[in-house]
Length: 82
Image (cartoon, rainbow, N blue to C red; front, side):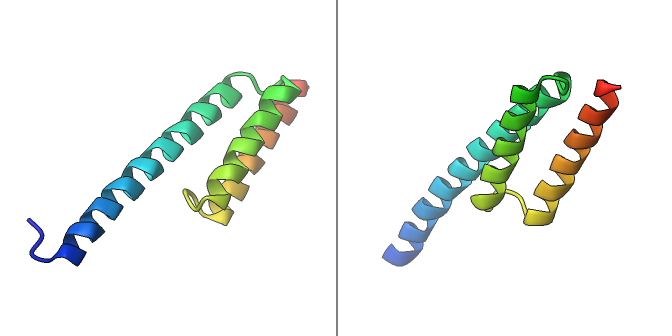
């Protein structure tokens, strides 16, 4: 229980941010799962890259993590093309 009005406001803001971040992370995981399942399709791969970039831009994941995800997707796509 918050003791001050500012602490109460901070609690409300934290809840909003938490919900927003959880939804964004869930969207990212879903997009990655969909992309990994169909890496040979260029449009799906592009959508996966886009989802990773958006998550990184929003601060849901770090820039290097986004880079690593994209690299692994590209590598899987190259393997599937063979």
